[in-house]
Length: 116
Length: 115
Image (cartoon, rainbow over all chains, first blue to last red; front, side, top):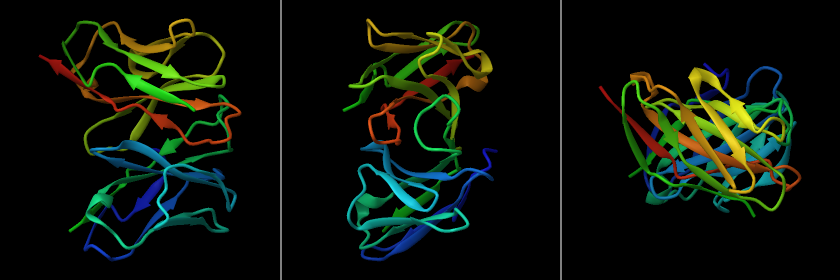
C-alpha cells in the first residue's frame, strides 16, 4: 500500500458527460501528479500540482482540468467525455517537486474510467 | 525533449533463469531513470532509480540496473526469475532541470515466467 488513495475505483459513464476523479496524497506529500494509462497511448503524464499551485503540464487535453485543495487532495475533472477517454487514471504524490533522489513518486491504485 | 524506448514488448523466461529487460533513453539534460513494476490490477511500484550517483543501482526483490551513458541504456536485470516477478515493467525517464517533473514512461515490457 503506497499511502495514496484514489476514488472511485471504477467509473462508467456515457459520452458527453463530465466526471471527477479524486486523489488523496500520502501524509506530508505536497506534490500531486496525474497520469493516464490507455492501450494505445501507454502511460502519459497529464499535470502536476505542488502545494495548491499548478507546476507542470504534460499531455492534458483542454477538456480536462485539475486542482489541488488546501488540504492537498486533488481532483481531476474530465468533461465532454469521448470513447477514447476510457483509460486507467493514476494519481501519484511526492514530498517535493523535481527529480532529486529523495523525491520518489508514489502511485495510487488508479481509477478505471469506461466511457460508453 | 526526453524519451524512452523499451526494446521488447514481451519477454518470456523460465523460473530460476536470468531476466534482462532492455531500455534505451534520450534526454537533453542529466536524466533521472527509474524502473517501475505494475502487477495485474495494481498500481505502479518503484523498483529502483538512478539519479547521478552510482551507475549500478540495486532495487527491491533482487533487481538491479546499470546506467551506461555511452550507450544511453538502463537495462534491468535479475539473476534468477521467480513466478511472482510476472508483471508489466516500465522504464521511466525524467530530466533534472528540464522544467517538468512528470515522468516519461516507456511502452512497457510484459514479463512472462514459465514454470
